[in-house]
Length: 358
Image (cartoon, rainbow, N blue to C red):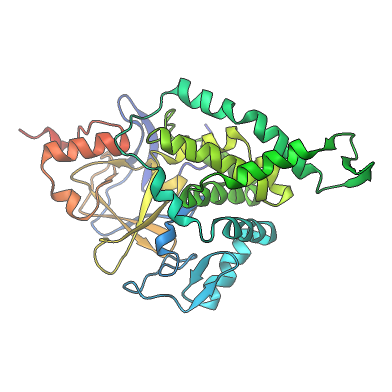
């Protein structure tokens, strides 16, 4: 039986289905302590929080105790620890990707404080019906914006009105819809999330199945404000992204990115001070197959853009290989507080040995 795309394979373990925890990783051999079990460098999308853009390298995520990095590319809004990292970042994003980041940086610059005004953590998570309605509510404006953008591709003047070669006219109504979108509040970190995923898909369409294969969260938005931030971002991106990306800027793609990222992302934290600083998060599909335990036998460590997974102790053949989703001091929380945190952030009740101990 062929292994689905994105599922990690190794002589040390296999991924298989379990009755209660979906897919999980199990040792296929005895694994000595400190063995490098897996290295995951398949980063599909990442978000560096806007407030850390000057201090964290956009390529390798290096951090120098809060000092500004020496290489800043103000056109795209990222800083880098070296010219090598900057050049590598540009190569990975490609010409269209760099244009996309430049377009959103121009849009977001000077308006990043709007993000904080839109969050209310006390709101309930939207259910599927509300999510569907929210995306439908912007469909008409999105259609008008698409026509306005199509006018940039191939237009000619007909009695003072721009006309696309297929006969669709670009009128004041279309331009008004585009202008209205640009005036709406901006959520910079949501914009970053969406652009990161769209650019990755554009450059790596052959690997899209790796994202499709991830565990799904059908209601991924934290609250109604979060959902509205995504629908506004959809219109923002239709209005400013390079034309070759517009076919990928759809509610289906943006919603899918959220449903796959929700339970599969890893926090990007500082390495020098035991992860006290949270810079953002990213999705490494192959790394997502390791389930959680409050008493893990696998320790994960970020090395640049990659995650290294090492045996935290001697592991016997047949044991499930588990990491912890908790960070730093969270590991020391009481059982009850760990349960609440895991349920709130990842949507499950932990049944690991440490939590089941009497």
